[in-house]
Image 1 (cartoon, rainbow, N blue to C red):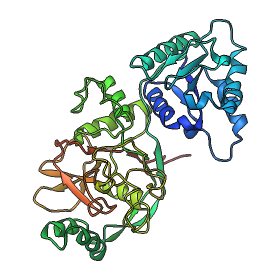
Image 2 (tube, one colour):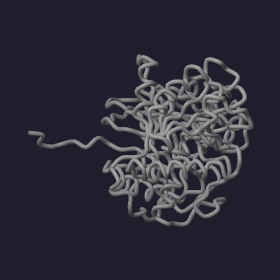
Image 3 (cartoon, one colour):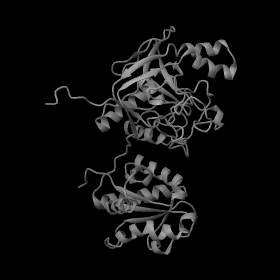
Image 4 (cartoon, rainbow, N blue to C red):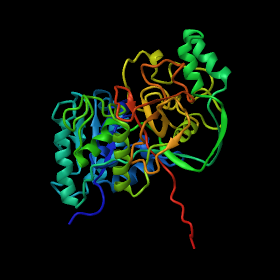
Length: 406
C-alpha cells in the first residue's frame, strides 16, 4: 500500500555543478518527487554537517551527481559522498538506494563504481533515472504526485506608493525617445501617484515556469501553448516562464492549483503586483531608482528571448525577494480596464468569468522592452484571449481568515 508521501531524493553534488543540478532538482520536483537540494532546503544558521547527514538518512534515494570537476576534487569524494555511502552500506543487498549520475562524460569514482550509473547528458538519461526512482518508490511504498507548488513570498499588510509622478515617468521615457506622443500615453496610465493600503498576501517569487505549467497540462489535458510538442515544453526551457498563455489559461491554472493544495490561489491584483515589485517607497525599479542592465532581462540585456527565472537573483530581486518583476515576460493581473480607454480598475469577483468589453492589465515589461517600459509602475492591458511570446503570469493568494476562531 502506498504511503501519502512523495519519494525523497537527495541530490549530492559539487558546488561547481549547481547550475546543472538546479535544473535536475526542478525537473524532479515537477515530476512528483520530494527532492533535497541544499540551495533550496538548507536554511541560514543551520549546521551544515548535521543537516546533510539527517537529509541523507531520511532519503529514499541518493543521486550522486558527477562531473569531471567534481570527481577530481578529493574533498567532494571523501566528504559529501561519504555521508551517502555510509548509510547506503547499511541497506539490504540489491536495494536501489544510491544512483551515480553523470552530468557529463567522466570517470566514476571507485567508491561508487559498484552501483550502475546513469548518464544524464544522454537523451534517454533522465527517463532511465526516473525508472529507477519509480522502482524505489514501489519498494518503499511512496507515491508520485505530478505537480509542483510555486515558491511564494510573503508581503506584509500596509501602505505603499502606487503609480508614478509625472517627473519620474517622463525622465525615464524621454531618455529613450524624447517627448513623443507615444510615451505620453504610457505616462498617463500611471497617473496619479497615490497611496494604497493592502492586507497581507502571498505572491509567487517567480513567474510560473514551463515545468510547473506542464504538470497542469498533464492533469487537465488542455491544449498546450504554442511551441510545445504535446505536453513537452521546448527543449532546455523548463525553468523559463511559460508563455503563449491567455488570461483564461492563467485563471484555469490558479483554479487547478487551488484544488491540489487547498489554498485559494488566484492572479494578483495589479496593486499587489506593484507592491511586491517595489515595496513601500515608490522606487522605479525593484532594486532602486537607477537602471542596471545586469539586473533584469530587458532589451538592454541583449538576450533576445525568455530566460531562466531567477537568472538575475538576488541582485535584481525586489525587497520582498520577488524575482523577474521587470523584464523577461509581461504578467497577467486580475484587473480589467474598459476598452473605451477608461483606466479605472475593476476586478472580476471570482476570476472565472471574463468581464465583457474589457482589457486585462499586464505588468512588468518583457525581454523585448527597454527600461522605459520595464518599470515597477508601468502598466498596459490586452484582450484576455490574446497570447504572445512574452506573456506569462505569477500567482498569489490571501491568507484564510477565521471570522470566529473561538
